[in-house]
Image 1 (cartoon, protein in one colour):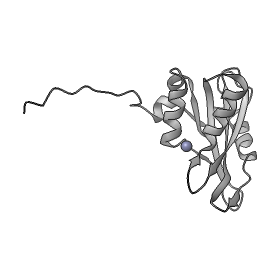
Image 2 (image 1 turned 45 degrees about the horizontal axis):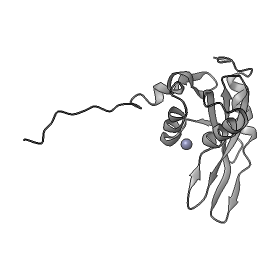
Image 3 (image 1 turned 90 degrees about the vertical axis):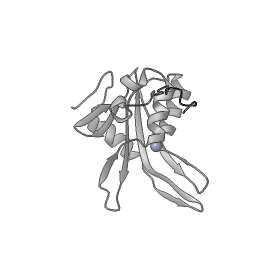
Length: 147
Ligand SMILES: [Zn+2]
């Protein structure tokens, strides 16, 4: 797959845009910008972010990119998301969103579970629902209090 939905960029271009955000900096209490992300709104606009990690907390690049999208567009629908990391030799690795980010995207808008396309490689793109199949699973159990 070279392009998805309303976006004006191919998956390879979005991977490159996310990679351009990487500017790893070791701080006193963590690592900042070692992961970059790009998200595409349903209008086709691209927003970027970086991971910010400290000893007290970590905010993933996907979530900073989505926060930027919300601030700029007031849109909560995420059409496409990709996050990348580079090794010491500059090789780019696409990394899937962590569990926190998967749930965060699902929580941003009820349609994101089916709308959001997650780039896993230049030729592998899956809906968020494939990575988070039981996001809304609350199964009431039979009353066993009398057992
Ligand atoms: Zn994450």
